[in-house]
Length: 330
Image: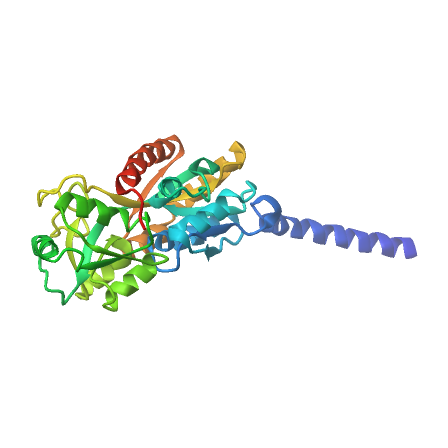
């Protein structure tokens, strides 16, 4: 009797286990170790990298089956966060949503005779998410109605018009240096820790101008709180069709875009890099990602694999040349 009871109990447990096994298999984490994948943004919230990172990370959570928190590690125009990921283990649990400035900051350190906080070669490119030309924006009640007004005033009053940026040699500093050189004007640079604080400085009246990707400033342009004067795109942007380009206005050498892309530590093994690429690709295909980026005014501009690696190499060569033209900044 005892043996028969024991057999029935064992059979029920076996059936229960069999019934639960599909659910248990479905619940198994898709990522090595089941640990969260941290996506580092090297700037405070509110800037271009942050705008790109948050919907991408949310969609990657669905693709990977693990949490993908966005962590802001701001400082030194992005160098602190970039260096943190460059030194992280290549185990797939630490990624970087970098801006184009990731390619110029090590050269800026060398120009200032400082040991670079990281080298670009310590990071491996995975995929580009956005690729936004910058727009020159001023306050909606500023006296300059056009780019020509702005340049003429800057020529009359060298160093009197101030602009904010995400830090020396950062993604918002470089386009203003390019504009100053092309237009033959002198502006006052006021650096901040990231694009979010730089935008806040313009909105609060602390500074008078800013070059920004369209994402962070689009809502303020639409509301009239900010006025866009020109774009660094080669042709007019679809989301700002009435905005002229610098090229249209006769300025050359000012074509520039702030792109945001996912990078991993260079020590990440090739098979794991491919898994990360596939997860980012799935995130880019997620309807919520595209919707969020469009709403933010920074549409998806996806590129991955060898194409993105070539894009990064070409942009690095161009931006290093720009850094050398800027030279030492005191």
